[in-house]
Image 1 (cartoon, rainbow, N blue to C red):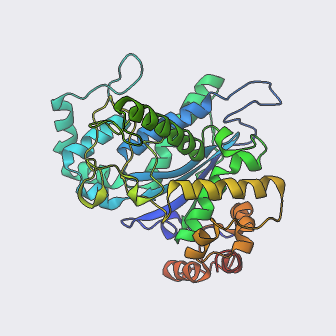
Image 2: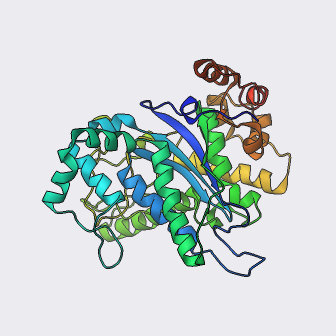
Image 3: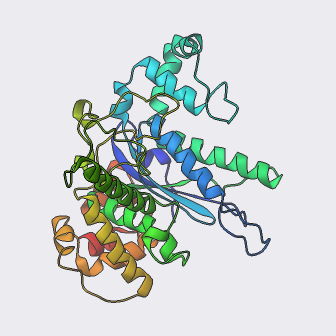
Length: 374
């Protein structure tokens, strides 16, 4: 397969959604139980999620989906250079300090920077402009994720050298149908690998975080309604935080609660260092609600796991119709997403436009794109 420069896939300065995959070198184990050595590396999945939470709170990038597998990880990211441009130099310096702290607390968390330390970061305009650009960069996000995990894993294994097989693979998602298929593909990875049987059991995936956070919100809502004596209403002044999926990009744009929106529905000001995890923005990435996405995910997972023909349920058919996705090819596109699409994924016309703009011929995958999404 021909290789392409990253700049031909990722369009800097533009909002875009990308599927990134990092794979361990040779037989290095990222997570889970290694059948050869007998060692259990399950705790490393928590490393990945904790690092993603930190990066999602400080980068101008939305984490749309993720899954931590045994020897690789998937992350679906949306770049937000418009958010980075709206940040002041002081906010850029604060975010950069949290990612690369010069001092840490006893528990390893970034220490609060002193005013003079932030002034040093802001003093050089050229360096400040470069940091602003990096905060909206896919390459820097993945570098800050993979390098940290590699250092911790090598230290734990008492070895040196490569932990990842190479630079992460990046795939541009050109339209909403590709974003939906890729998100479902990422969330169903543990089921396809036989690690678990249902999305609510697949820990350290975005689906698991969304499902359990949704259940927790419903339990809190019922408890609030019982305390207030008003069925279905929550306590007045209740803060919308401490959620398991608070750092993930919401599915739909109307997921933001009142009182936390900035201009254009975005949260631009970074929170204090010691706060629950948060996201880069409240702008959703799909034109459907969370419940619709979870129903489609659950149905697709049953087909992928059981290899059944089955028909699309009536309540799910309008979702695919609205996105102009052929329901007969939906399951096949999710099951074969990693093989059918390489540098970019989307409808045939969008793949051809991307190829033309890059001066390349991405014929591989165009036929599949027409079959799956056309």
